[in-house]
View 1 (tube, helix red, strand yellow):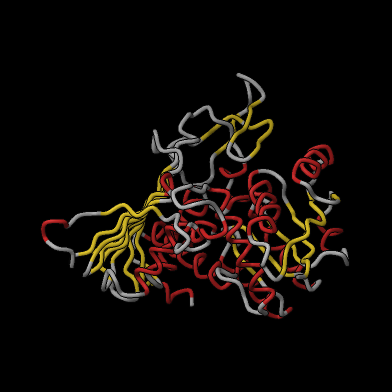
View 2 (cartoon, helix red, strand yellow):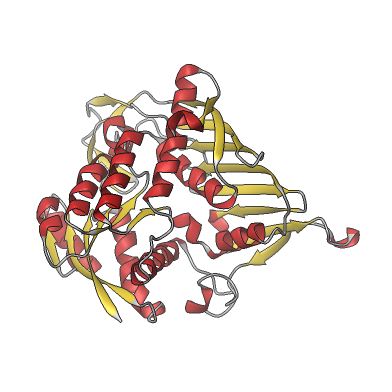
Length: 389
């Protein structure tokens, strides 16, 4: 068993999720051929950084990512800083010969994503993009059922990612609402997960058409922010322009002929994190909602008439992906476990000298769809993915 020395940029929402995954992997997947060593964490605020370093269990800290990348005792750079930092850090890390783990969306633009992929490929390093929802055991079961042909030829894929955390018009102007930092709003933040899920389960996109809306145009400037929460300086706080979408919807035709519909919004009152999809095939259907992430609803047309209907499968048995490492059947797992499974794939791929999945190729394909939808909205037309390939 060997160690892979990790240097991580970012220490807030995703930084905590990734740190937890690195700590959990040796306990629950001890046979993993390569295990992570939490060597260094990086952030600009020395006080916040030291607090996170101690709380999360990192050995050392850096306030400059350039110093982190240059360290000889680092094998992999984990990037969960805001999207506008992804490209520069990734290219520098690749040139330094470090393996790469980058959160989604991969970049601000398709051009940047392609440059990041090219740099990683030129350097010959391993690269992974953080689409963690693939790693829920119930989603892995959906993939298995589809791959085995048990729901037949796929006709429909419909997906929604619904949140409501910025429904209040007085919620502060956090970085996720600024295009120059985030790239896009609900489209790139939430829609990217739906796009990746569709590619994982159904296949490549052929063409798209979409629409978007920004419901609240201005917000109070934030004083501080952590994850999906923030504070403003007071009732008289200055206001700034929201430059991203609050909601984006689009339709697609897949290369295999299936039809798809997608909705990503942060204005769905009562929905904290409804990340859900339904797939209809010629022999059955599958339904999944991440708010009930241990369950998969399955329907087979070949069932006898008197018992036909959706069945609830609790994906917690040892026969389900990753579950033999956790608890007895019926003892459910949560959001944080998807990151542990993600890191397991990353470490296993490095040990086997192959690219992990999903990797920067998947990040670029996702970025193509994001940009195609944006072009469709701007030009009010169907846009083919081949325009970007």
